[in-house]
Length: 512
Image 1 (cartoon, rainbow, N blue to C red):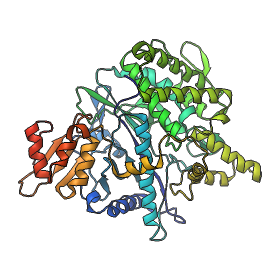
Image 2 (cartoon, rainbow, N blue to C red):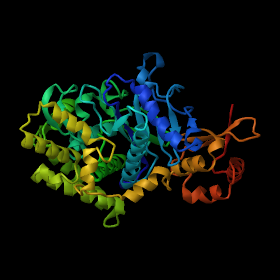
Image 3 (cartoon, rainbow, N blue to C red):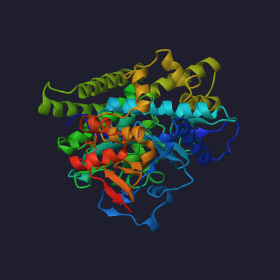
């Protein structure tokens, strides 16, 4: 395999009301979702989420946690009718998750596509803020991962993997990689510790919130490797690796590297191509120590006694990846893999020489330079609350207020996808995954869809005594190539269902 696989990004956005810190975040988050859904008309707001096949308490280590012993935050398969939850025509899910509005991108097959549909989520959230601003006091959103006062919210990655891959191999080879990856993909943060009690600047917004190496939870006792075994696909063939340790990225290159390098390491794990032991001693404390050192000189100790920096550890993974690709593909590499490998070496070269050189590609470097500019200009200390305010404003989704967006407009960052591509992704689904079928059904038959999920669409066809579920357990079926013509010639859902049954591609089942 290469960097290409089924993948996606889930982003919870920080939320606030200007001048009202006590505002109810769950209520506000619902307003955000409903503001966007209502702007799209009944087409976006009509379909709810189908929870039938979700299993958030199933653990990849071979057991399932009893519901009586689970934290309430883990029960993501229980519908709360008080919370907003919609499916969009681009195949994404927009809903309220743990008192935050969350945009879960549609399934894509490349890191570049993941960047595109993740940025589409930014535009969707910005549009909600614009609409809510017309009703004072308004609501504002931030693409970040902590409020700086002790609360953290996630940016989760999802990667489809072969089920046959031993989970112990995933843990062994991914933990060291995740400890080091933040030097390329961290989004930067003012303050040290979960509540920012110590002064300073660090690479990652999330690292201080992790407590264990492996575990099922996502909002407490956060693990470096999450063990949720909920594939949203054929369970005998696939597992979905749910990665909760990443930051929300604005920089295209950092976001591309986050998805691309991880996918490539997973390919090596699947093919058992990593023949060295890079196990890190004390991975949780090392994760945090690396984040706390913007000079990138913090040493990481491996189990065999080797000590090296996070950048040097990533070079080890890069060398393994280069050897893996050369052995299997030689010079015949797809464009996505070539792009990821090129940026991987480029960014590591810059971080190794001088981290400041990576300001066009890496979020934390760019943010640090802006903050140090304020420090130099105004004679501030890292304890100054104005720096924390700048940190928050960096991730403001409003393009005229957010510091990142203003710098982006000034040409300060490398951009990999165009504004036109991102705007198109706001409404259009990817064409090469099942998200195409989901999104196009929402667009074409909005009043005849009762619910949808990652692996199903449920139709409510006039004249039918029961609902009809179309299962979509194969993520690479339901693409434009396979169902585009079928959708084009089906004027209504009843015709579509008859055609599907006849073609035996996606056989509808009754929902009692």
